[in-house]
Length: 423
Image (cartoon, rainbow, N blue to C red):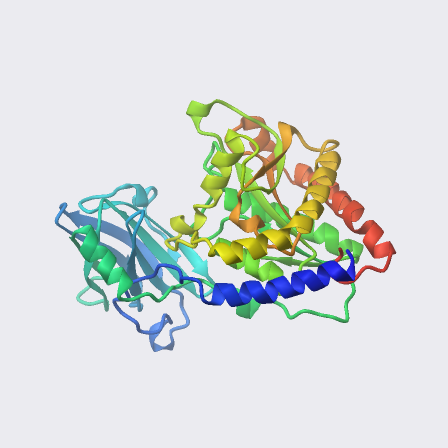
């Protein structure tokens, strides 16, 4: 990459930051209890959620979780779809199997999981707009466990949206403070590996209940180790454990670190009504999906933030879009170059989709100055693919193939003494 392009990207990044600074903020929440989200009393033992109950009707509903100790909470509501989000300290969930699928009254279903280190989240999908009447926790007493109690009441949409508008304070799990500092003295390109989903967002499900979030994290760790052993690159993962990271945070993380390449790792699943598909696919960014399947997948992946209770899909304004488009033009060329190399190398080790190179509007590929691809390693809904995805031998061979593609991408730049951004 020429000095001219780097200068343009730098200017555009400054302009983009200025524009986004005045762009509308993300729609937010209605805090009910703003006490710090930390374990009370300095307890060292992590609280455990041991049971859950939902009772009531379409006018009033009570949601109760039994706990081994009292905790703090903060609850708020979100629209489109209607949700109630409860943020709590990190909790070990030992609730009955399929508990979240059994809704009642105003609650259709609920889900729960780790949202960041030190913090968990419960998200209740509701049948319509609701008001949080009460949100509190109780100490254990008289032989009864500690409890988290949420009282919901039906309301109208106008009142619901008014409440949200009056308290526009986004709550987003951030990894910025955890990001390793840039090392300008290290000339090796920095590669960010992004295991999709995590925490409350499990991703797709395998035929035997396997979670996508676990499959792709295991693969990312194998690929990281392969790349680190070569000593040619610096490697960072967006998550190294079962933590949810919002989509825009993944992109921001890569840009803040000056990443030379961003690889998002996923495993697709096809609904039974849509038949069966198999093989790996490599995606690049495009506002116009290459086919209907690519459009479906991008729409599904881009809803990850909604699943976790935070909607980060607000688009920047027109000026920001123009700046992003200008910065992305050459970045897209590099992204496509790597994607083609990845497909070529994967042919020797992995089963490929009949159309292995595609494009769609994935949020995680929107960094204007970081070449980015999304690799769907296979289909969790296909027996043969799932067998491979969970095989340590297959992971090792496929990681070798991607490592070779990375070497092909960076080789000429490293040999020519390219800067740390590898372009």
